[in-house]
Image 1 (cartoon, rainbow, N blue to C red):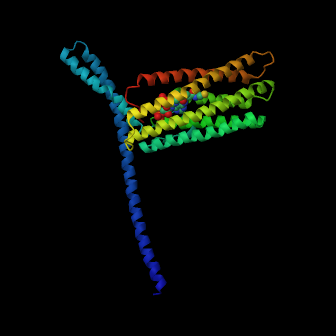
Image 2 (cartoon, rainbow, N blue to C red; image 1 turned 135 degrees about the horizontal axis):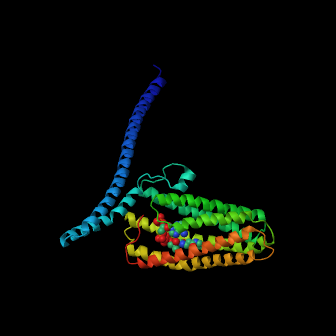
Image 3 (cartoon, helix red, strand yellow; image 1 turned 60 degrees about the vertical axis):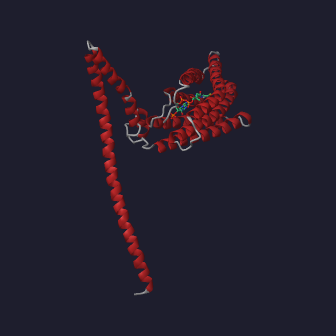
Length: 339
Ligand code: COA
């Protein structure tokens, strides 16, 4: 037998063994996957059955409590107290189980499962979302800067507005996925992105006339400022995310709950004046456009639509931010949130 062939045969044997091993590992993988999806289904149906039974139990207890003795009432209260936490636990469990997509995600993505099954992958997705926001915000900042200071060309303005529409639409999708995965983003911020996408879309269609030119610089300066504030906001929110992760995983023992709280408050008090200034700039834009819409030579519907959008943004942003700050002040001495 030629020497070369022995080498080939030896290599083939080892390759074949590895191939058999791979097949065995893959078979095991499929088997585990099957078991895994069975456990998932089991958990999901147990949760729905528990929810139903809990509801029935509440009715039963209500009936039982009328005319109950003092001791019975005490027992019922104890059960009630224990039951209180259950719905929260169920919701938390559900964030690790496949769920049906809401209407919006169903329309955009179809019926694909978007639940991330581990805490690490949830954090990684959120982290990537913050990075995406930051990159796009920096790009928008540069674009608005160029349009404001260097070139006055309707075509470039249109590209800026198109970028804004695309950015906000993407955010609505990403945020719906985050919410499915247990994020507590307030409904307003998601709605804010729909309104902003609408506003940028309307700006995109506004014809290049006298009125557009009057509002152009004010809008570009506002975009510039908003991108700047969003950079600060991204910095604050990814800071919160990193600290929460360190707290959750207990990798970094230097970080305490108090440490997180004090960092959060420092960040928030620094950010708030910029945020409120931005909100009042939105109000100013809304009122300027409203005045413009009342001019006799204003024939463009875009003016009124943009004005209404700015006013809605102002009200939503202002009141939601005030509510967030009030809620944070209230729970200042309580334990921090965890994802
Ligand atoms: N957009 C997207 N997600 C937001 C958000 C926003 N504006 N505000 C809060 N969230 C998310 C948080 O990341 C967090 O997510 P998680 O549950 O996945 O961790 C969740 O919502 C709950 O956040 P909360 O604790 O209520 O607030 P926060 O400390 O993260 O942020 C503010 C507080 C006030 C800084 C933030 O809400 C904010 O920046 N608001 C102002 C936005 C604005 O007005 N923009 C226009 C500027 S001109």
